[in-house]
Image 1 (cartoon, rainbow, N blue to C red):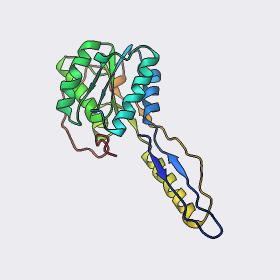
Image 2 (cartoon, rainbow, N blue to C red):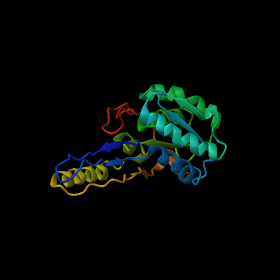
Image 3 (tube, one colour):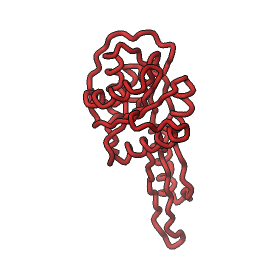
Length: 219
């Protein structure tokens, strides 16, 4: 998500009020890079998107990143897009027509790891292996992604927290705070769901766990 943190300093007789804003995480750019550099680079020639219903600021930004990248290569087909609430079963029902429309050799970028598990379930029901037959990418690198081998975009939460604390410490100490913002971008963590050489996966049943870092864009 693109988040602006306001670190406005308090004025004193010797120092006027200064405003410093940090642009924290650029999800749209991350989606764009994911589409062009990773998924298409791995050989997936059709890339769809599964997001949340319109109105979620985080979800809308992630969708906008995918749409921008898809438009660059003429791949923004309406039948390759779907949306669903943050629920594995509902995500599976929504993405099934997308997967069927693209067929093997396609891939789907998802706005969260929970939505990505919906795609994982559909592939298993179709007898397809995630990665080898069809690519899946989630977002947030939650416990769910790690447990089921989902490639996912990891938010730089630790780095952002450290930087914000450092800026606040500078403000309290009277040291100058930065006026220019800094953009932090998620890191792509690659796993089997985008590995074209992945062997057939063992039969596993996903559970819609309330994992700590995949909260449906409510940030």
